[in-house]
Image (tube, rainbow, N blue to C red):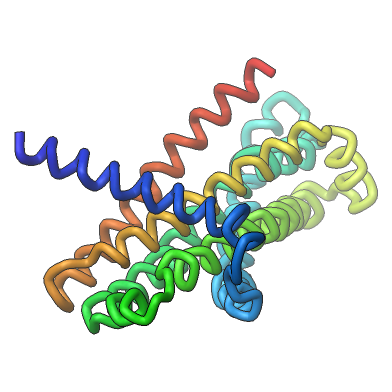
Amino acid sequence: MSIVILYLRHLSSFFWLVKQALYWTFIGSFKKRGFSFREVLKQMNLAGVNSCPIVFLIALFFGLTLAMLTAYQLKKIGSELLIGALVGISFTRELGPLLTAIVVAGRVGAAFTAELGTMKVAEEIDALETIGVNPVRFLVVPRFLALLVMLPCLTIFSSIIGILGGFLIGKFSLGIEAGYYFKRTLEALVLKDIFTGLVKSFSFGAIISLIGCYQGITVQGGAEGVGRSTTNSVVVSMILIIIVDCLWNTVFYFL
């Protein structure tokens, strides 16, 4: 029974954080001095630009792998020329948003938790409240906005690199010309595919930032608590990402 009460308490606190983050992002900033745009740009650089190399590697090798696996099966029915369309749709609708979110959750979400958790343990967050600075406005909102903007950008980047990875297999293994490969890819893609991936990435960005910040500002137990919360942040973020991805797939399947 105590575990249920603990989870309900965490759920209540998390929704309070979500409410405060949305308020200071879209309403509170118009009433009084809101978040710092300089801090948002800093977090966009740390969370987005610095994540490009690892997103590039993951997307490229996953694109190569997906193309090789599909080519192996498509050759049996003489349809290997469809590999561009298959890789393009797969990355745009599903693999691009999902792979990017998982990578960012492990890299950026954990960093958010560790950074805010360290501040919590050092009582810096309490000091902010003492001098009248709202911790959610000052610490959470810049990170929230940064991922809302950068995760869709990283998703687009990931999808493009994944498609290029598929092209490398199509070109050098199957002999498909570049013009034909990209033409079939663009013909297969529709606006709904792109819209689906972007909607997913926005929701994933919100999940990663809010879970990471919540785990950070609720740290208890010193350095050991920071490590425990960092692990929880990554695990919970990945679970929610997969659940929300399934829900979005269900919604778009019937649209």
